[in-house]
Amino acid sequence: MTSTGNVLEPVPARMLNELTDCARLYYLDDVAGEWVEGADTVDGRRVHRWVDRPGPPPVSPEPGPGDELHARSVSVGSREPPTIARYALQSAVPPRVTETIWIAERARQALIKWSDGMEVFAGKDQESVPLAGHRHAYYLPVDDDGDGVLDHLIIAARDGFDPKARVALEGVRRLWGHGGHDLALTLIGLGPPADFDGPATGPGSPALASSPTWESRTPFVLPRHVKRRGGRIVHGPEDQLRWCLRAIGLPEPVRVEPMVEAPGRRRWWTFRRMRHRGGGARGTDEGRGFRLCFAEPVSGPIAVGYASHLGLGLFVAV
Image (cartoon, rainbow, N blue to C red; front, side):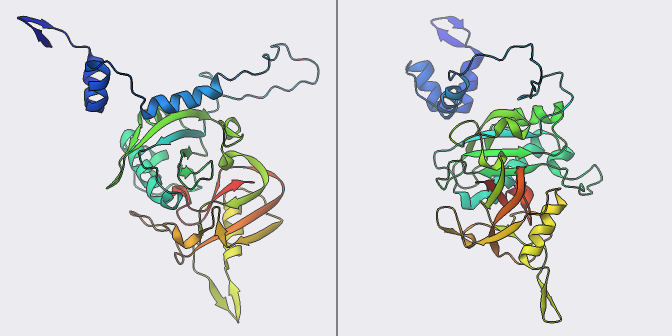
């Protein structure tokens, strides 16, 4: 309530929410009466640039002979839950792509908190036994425009997100900066990977595209040690990469080529390659990059190796 003489006037609840979220924006908006762009409004205009863009006339609801209809979104009545959640990241100082694993850990912690420890986000059942078959969520911060800083976050789950999980996904809007700047999250899409297969400058992401050729965007860290038996190398880097690809159901690549550098001439050793918390099977902490060539196009996301659920070993379509 505010006082005008001896009369108390009600204050809109919206103003209290704005004051709690950002005192500076509250003053400018509700006291000084000035409009100032925020991270949400800037990102909203960018998203609506694609939503409102002109396009071809809608397809007739009556398909002709031989026509195929493809679902591009998940409706409320759909039996298939969305498997991908995609966020836009905003920060005063955007995190570098080399900090991928740390941002992924913060996203995991936030979703575990918001979901009250749901298995899909925690990666463990009610008895704290790790889920098998890569069924829990992948947290994949990505640099979609290739400028060296993280601009989006992808949360992917093979079995999809049920209604309770979607509530948690919609609730997370900020990640703790841990000594730096907080990250604002804007959920811009829920659906299958095909909904996000497009140019990185638009609603698409190279990590969710379909292509026969894929390149490392973050370092592949071996899940086990390289060994020598009888003078020959056993479980070498390429052998382990191929084993990891088979484990997530991908076909055998026809060619695997090493990559000395990441995009932007970054060496793989410049990336953080250790989890801040938790363990996971790992050989050495050396990072490697590869180019994968398949006989037919395959769809992303593709992330394999140590800490692949936290953004390491991520490949993008080229």
